[in-house]
Length: 266
Image 1 (cartoon, rainbow, N blue to C red):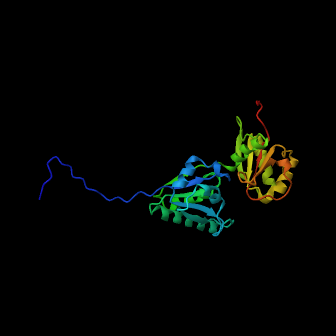
Image 2: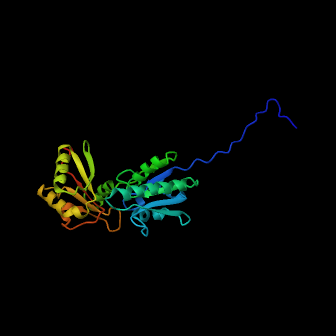
Image 3: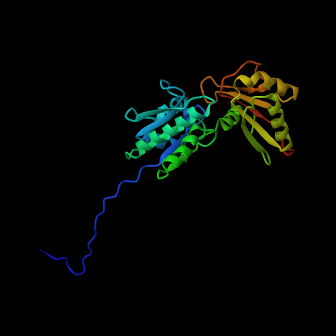
């Protein structure tokens, strides 16, 4: 039996299990595929599995529709059902199931992205999956790639229609809130925003628009408010709130309300 030279170094080769890929949560913006960041496009194009939220099993979902331009036919599609209900248990079950399904793909050494509309950390379904994954599979890692929020896209799109609507200037604050269900709550939000020099961004207007409009009209705020519906989609609606009739609007509509402007402006 041959012996190794005295100065030889003997190395034991250990077989190490591969470290799973990080789950990438991708903000795909409000609707226009061109608004995805370069980082988001690269992550989607190179993923093995593309997951996305849907309201029901047979639906594509808005996030998939936005990002599908950047996907490949060879990729596995993984729709995850997130029920649009108020009850806690169905939502908890859906988040836990999604975390387990994504973890299973990651442990197969596959790269996985989860798409979400808007930004990946702002009122995002993916945030609940992120928290569930951290709790149920603490050894797995998560990476977020931010997207353009609808409120920012709406303010930017205003310039194209001749409405200059900077979202915040100088010492302005911005308060982003889902539209309350009661007019008294909206009144308090408006008063708080005004006293604190904040622009109020109301998302998810939906069926509340008729009474919201009446409230703004009483406070003489219709002219100073920007209404946006389905920002970034071909049927986008963008106008001053005073030009939008008091009719019910879809879920994906928002309102930007500015009650004051800085003293020093061009």
